Amino acid sequence: MALRDDIQTAAAQTKEASRILARLSTQMKNNALLAMAEKLEAHSEGLKRENAKDLKAGEQKGLSGPMLERLTLTPKRIADMADGLRQVAALPDPVGEVLGLKRLPNGLQVGQMRSPIGVIGIIYESRPNVTADVAGLCIKSGNGVILRGGSEAIHSNTAIAAILESAGDAAGLPPHAVNLVQTTDRQAIFELLTCDASIDLIIPRGGEGLIRTVIEHSKIPVMKHDKGVCHTFVDETADIEMAESVSLNAKIQRPSTCNAMETLLVHQDIAGHFLPRFAKKLQDAGGSIHACPESFKYLKGNITALSLAEDSDWRAEYLDLRLSIKVVSSLDEAITHITTYGSGHSEAIMTNNHAHVTRFLNEVDASAVFVNTSTRFNDGFELGLGAEMGVSTSRIHARGPMGLTALTCEKYIVLGDGQIRT
Image 1 (cartoon, rainbow, N blue to C red):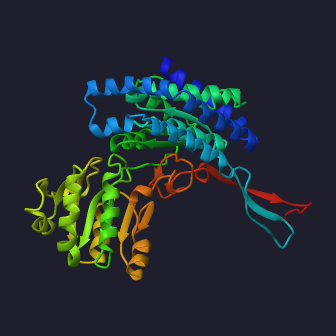
Image 2: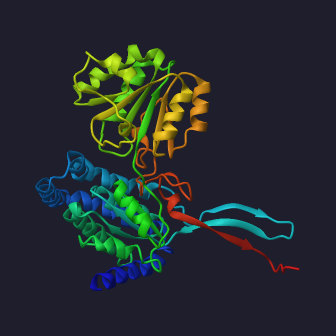
Image 3: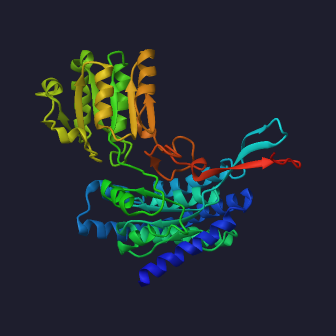
């Protein structure tokens, strides 16, 4: 009961803060974000010390390599958090933007105005940089935010949130605008999901189990950041060197992320030429391959880290250097495979055929579709949003990286000069 009361009180406090945030000037919000960025950089060493506590505890608990990698706060990641806040500060403020204002025959002017959603609750695992990213986006868009990070990152998240809160207070933000749930008790998640009077939207970021739990128990609308079973299709017209470079980047640049490639599809006409050299470079980078029978024939004898793929491999989000490879006979077969096994996250085609580009863009159902470039770009920071709340794989309200605009809703505004309805 005490935990429930604590969570409900925190949610109510952030709701009250959100009402103040919604009417703050753009300049005040920007000043707060810039102060937060400066203070994060100034406390970089302290953040690394707190992060080291989480890493040590994670190793003792036997967290996987990918989980530990996502948990780590390197100097670059701390700098990126600060840069993300500065980028958000530099972006146009969506709050108050008027869309589609038009005059009706009766003289009324009708349009829509962007306004904050209210309070965003985000439940996330492992990555402590999410704490700063989502706080910055919520503040700029005039929303309060309640954060519940994973227990594995409690020291890192608490330190980041304290810095953000202190800098925000000094810059004039209302108390509790950024509100971190500091208990590791898992029951806190379930209590948050009942706070529908104070929290307007829940965004879960994490594994399949977390997302399923949130969807099943939430009384609040949920925007999913689902797993990433991402594909790259190399068709028969692709530039081989470009396809090799992009496909390797999509897999090995940071394999523990949800936008990393998990399955490579290769057209049968170029498989014999493309696959052996690609697989050799993947193996040299520490990778291993689960191959369909056709691709297995091309790779057997060329690499040692090779096994026959099972059906479960086509649905797997490995989050490491394992890769599934399938040879396909056509664009149709590639699209069918993606439709069957993909998670709607990030899909790419490597091609020089304009008709194939058009079909892939139109027929592949995903939050982002890429042509001749890496799926690793499905990221708010990379796509110019400053940061992201997550990559929405839902189809309602927002899809893809959720930046500032995705954290607003529209209300109709009707401007008149005395008109009455007859």
